[in-house]
Amino acid sequence: MSELLVDFITSLDGCASGDGWPGFWGLEGPEYLAWLGEQPQATYLMGANTYRLMSGFAAGTVPSGQDEFRPEEEASVDELTRAPKVVFSSSLQAPLTWANSTLVRDSAVEAVSAMKSRGTGLLSTIGSLSLSRSLLQAGLVDRFRVVMFPVITGATGEERIYDGYPDVALEMIGHRTFDNSIQLVEYKPRVLDHPPLAAPA
Image 1 (spheres, rainbow, N blue to C red):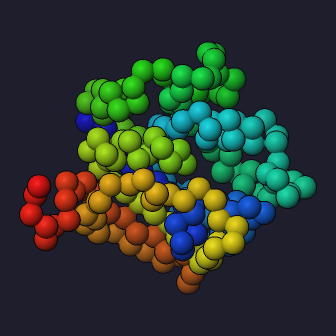
Image 2 (cartoon, helix red, strand yellow; image 1 turned 90 degrees about the vertical axis):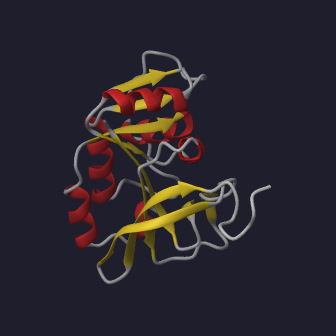
């Protein structure tokens, strides 16, 4: 059976990106980049918005406010291009132009549940806040990992990750600090019907 990982890179205040900030907020260090290079091969799951953004990067579109990709960003996009990707969308048209991408129009929850039951490798989300939230709510997520970068984007932060989430209990199963500044936390999630001290309705 496949394992499903929801994987986020965030600012300390829980934003997935910030207006005018480069990838990794420009704060990635050698330890973190080395760890990225050691990650096991995964099939990446994403929605239409993430696909449009990342496939645009792969085609050479540079992020707003930058003249060119930094080497770290280029390497990350190249790795994604080589990896198998499953894109859930009712608006995109097949065939998808980004290499190794498969379009699925069916319910993401049903499709991922089937992928988990018949597969053996790692499934990992990338970005795709709505998709990640729906998979978590459905109880399909085995691991929930967040890498927090040492910046608060109170004025420029975008894509607030946890808005609209249910209450979730998190059992820590791993943690690590990279480059004396970047913090990784990894949890086994359990969606709650009600706060643990409250009586059920």
